[in-house]
Length: 281
Image (cartoon, rainbow, N blue to C red; front, side, top):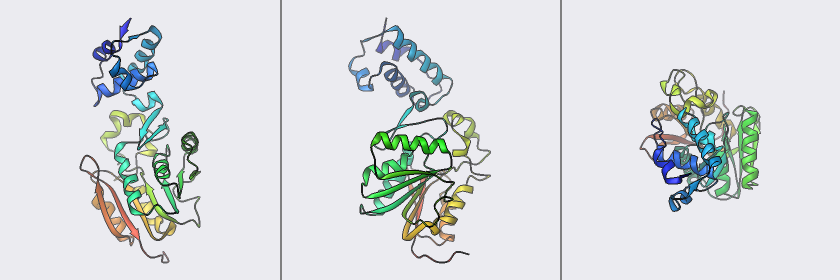
């Protein structure tokens, strides 16, 4: 039999940006153990069944399949979330939306909306940090709504709810103090769609027209009709779209418009406050 250390040292993932991390996650999954176990007991032997599970997972990763899809789980904020092929894999950069939302409004009771919720990651992270908030997550994909609800139930968060809706289509008459969204924002001809993990993720969660801004335009246009006076809109977007998104927010009447940078130094989210309800022609 082979040891944990030998498996990790001899397996190869040449096309992964994080090969060692991927290998440890896949082996830990095959063994039913944590990464810290692998570090503590590198000399432990791996039996044939465990080795076969690791080899199968490794082959899938070598073919380009995302680690999150192989494991069926992805960490986000302080949560472990079930993931599936019909939703976007939650990414660390999106935690900036959560962090900013928590900073903008107090921890007192408030209605909060997450548009295009997918796994429910943003909504559930906000709900976990603010028990007094009532957080709604919407998605137009029924399977995504069901997945988000399974994550909610497993985490035991009673202040979140998930509803099928194409953006605001099922939310007539509702108002929110905070609306957040990580919408599709990649241009249809972007070469990155044919690279890495994006090849395995649904185009409906990634692509938004010729310039990648179609869904962001729609959200900015319609959001004031669903915000309380003084409510905030926060949007994730591409690293080179911040100026365009700020312009769209300002043109629609938002104030306090700004962009914030992610851990890589890119302007990753933009936000604005809608101070006054007014008729919209």
